[in-house]
Image (cartoon, rainbow, N blue to C red; front, top):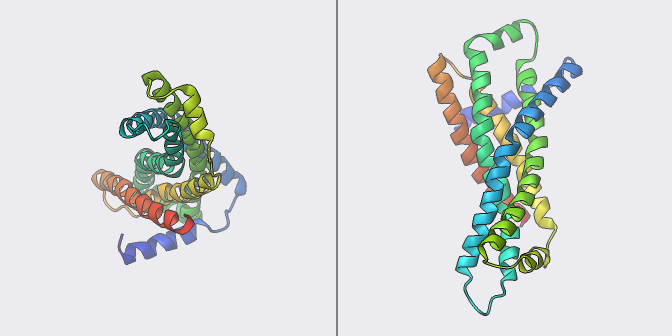
Length: 244
C-alpha cells in the first residue's frame, strides 16, 4: 500500500465514520455483521485454538528434556505464548482469510454491478452504510473470539499434555496458575482490537475501489488478504514493542 493508497484509505475511513443517516438501519447491519464475524467464525477458531494448544504443549515438552527443569514450566510457557502471541495473531490471520476475502468480494461485487453508485445517487453515505457496521462488528467480535481462543488453547494444552503422558494434570494446572501476570491479557486484547480494525477496514477499502469485472474482484479479494496479513504482523510488532 503506497502513500496514494494510504491517503485514499484514510479518506474512505473518514467518510465511513460520518454520522449515520438512520441509526436503526445501522444497528441492524451491525448485528448482522457481528453474527457473521463472531458466530460464523466460532467453530473454525475453536478447532484451530484447541489443536495449537495441544501441539504447543507436546513441542515444549519435547524441548524441555532436563531433570533440572520442572515439568510445570510447560504449562507456564504454553499459557504465556498462547495469550500473548498465538491466540491473537493466528486467530487474526485465519480471520483475515475468512472474513477479509468475504468483505472484499461483497463490496467489490457491489462496486462492479453499480450498486454503490445507486446508493450514492439516492443520497446514502455508501462508505458509512457498507463499511462502518463491519468495522464496529470487527473491533467488538475479534477480541471476544481471541478470549475464547486463549481459553481453548490452554484447554487444548491440558488435553494434549495429559493424554500423551508428557506431564500430569496436576503439573499442568500448577504451571498455568503459577506467576500469572494479568497484564498479558490486556496486551492480547489491545492486539485483538487493532487486528479487528485491520481485518474489516483493509478488505473494505480494496473492495470499494475495484474497477472492472469478476476477475478484478477476485484479484482485490486476494490482495485484501495479503495486505491484511502483512498489516497484522507489522501491527503485532508495533503493539508488542509499545506495551511490553
